[in-house]
Image (cartoon, rainbow, N blue to C red; front, side, top):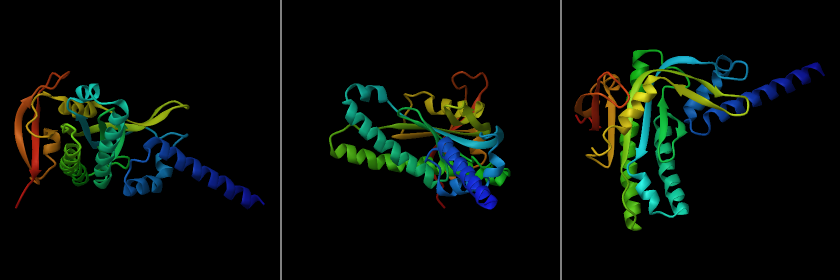
Length: 251
């Protein structure tokens, strides 16, 4: 009888932990990350929350250019339908490249590569950065397909911006008992966001991808980039090296 009670309690605790992780990360983690998180649940979970943990990861922000103007001339039901189709396509690419979607921001999103299991070596951090950049190029290809479909139905084409930055962050449960999410905070998150929104009128391609110097250092010449120089991003006082990603490096 005692053994039965213990087993029932353990099963209940296991279910509670799994539900908690699903609530924090949603359904946006790749199967590999979901498994890694579950395998490390005893280390990650503490007092019903994920404790704050410092790590280095790569952040990826996206946004649709001129979305407000599109929203003004598009019926709300239609707007929501095609926006969901767009976000689903982008989410699929993020999962395929082993990232997680941390949050949706209306017509954009924040994805992170290198969480929730921290990358602790330069080689592993480099893989995260390269995965994020490769993901952004795949997003650009998905955008081409989306625009082809939109053109066939007489809709205007979409353009998007991507900002990517690699740096230190702190992750963990954010919020209270009634509402809690997987929080990712740090200056690195802000830099990625500022890269995405930098000079919105400078759009040389349907999908503009800007990365910071810190990400560029991890790419190992695997991608062709265009230097944009040392720039001061909005809200910052120091310059940062900025590059536009063009394509994978060809042999």
